[in-house]
Structures are given as C-alpha cells and as structure tokens.
Length: 112
Image (cartoon, rainbow, N blue to C red; front, side, top):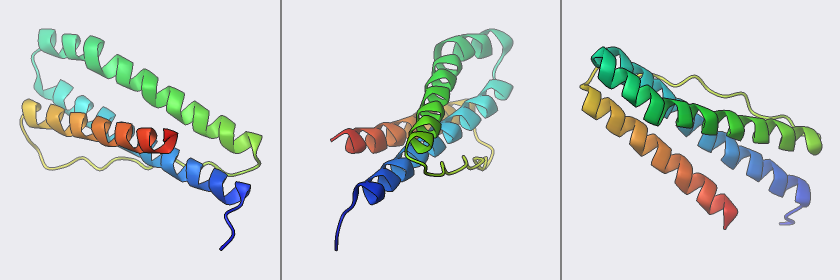
C-alpha cells in the first residue's frame, strides 16, 4: 500500500483533531468543576487551569484549521464533549487532567 503525502496530511489532521477533542473535554470538565467550587477557589482554578487550557485549545484548533486550509483539506469539526456523571470537583478536575494527558500523548506521538 502506498503512503502518500496526502494520506499523511489527513492522518496528521485526524490526530490533531483527536487532541483537540481531548482538550475540549478537559475544558468541559473544568467548567463543571467551576460550578461546584466556592467563588475564591473557582477564580483561582480559572486563572491557573482554565485560561491556559483554553489558550492551548484555541491554538491547536487554529493550527488544525490553518494546516487543513494550506493543503486543501477539510478540518474535522470539533465534537462537543459529553459531560460525565455528576461527581465531586476533585474527580471532575482529575477527569480534566486525564483528558489533557491524553491530548499530550496524541500530540507527542504525532511529533515523533
């Protein structure tokens, strides 16, 4: 089977979209945790976790869109994350951390 530049680019887009989906899920989990925390703790979480994660997600989506446009491909639309079952803020933040770790693994594998 021949591996073409076009199929390689499509695979890159798929992997980037998978990473973006993971970050989107992490953002949703942090949003859920935010609603469960007291105001001060929620504000700290927003500053230290949510904003940097939102910036990383936005950068990844922009990269995906630009890459697709550069090579005449279609970027896969981001899927809306499903919220899991209700849980404690600690569990919800752990879910977000797991999603970020998964995204990191996907992007690291792509870089290798």
